[in-house]
Length: 217
Image (cartoon, rainbow, N blue to C red; front, side, top):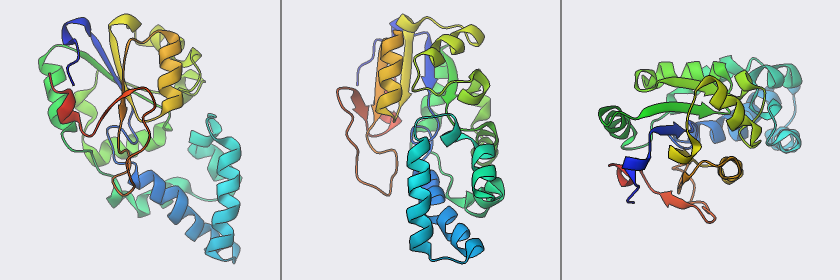
């Protein structure tokens, strides 16, 4: 993929599914939490999963869906303790580190812009060691809006100034890419396979990459 790097000053990167394999999050919410929920409630894993999927779906795309504290209260579970139980599944996608080093070498400003809760961000940075590659790491919980809301980018710009016309966003979520496009972010790239254990996903009208090797300047 030939991006006009001379026209890009800022690189905004999603975390889960983009920099990191979404397998961890999918396994955690769809398998591990239902397992522990069933054990505590004394119900079957299938019944627990069905109940939880419905509760997740009702909050999809909202700040609550991404909030560790919300689900700890809602489900009466120690979410971060449960995440630690399967933290060995946290993995960086191929060629991410080389890409981040190339961005630093090219003088680009690089930031994580994520819907992940700050506790999850802290856990994943501790596990991956990626934090030194970023000029900033901003969560939607800091800004009070999920990335699906175009207002997120306005608030982001206030604390991490960037020119939308000279910025690149790489994200695995089509609704997020749509909101960024509505705000005026010019260069938008999707991820073809956010979860390495699942088939490639539809990238809509957005250019998509199989790995960050395709974005290397």
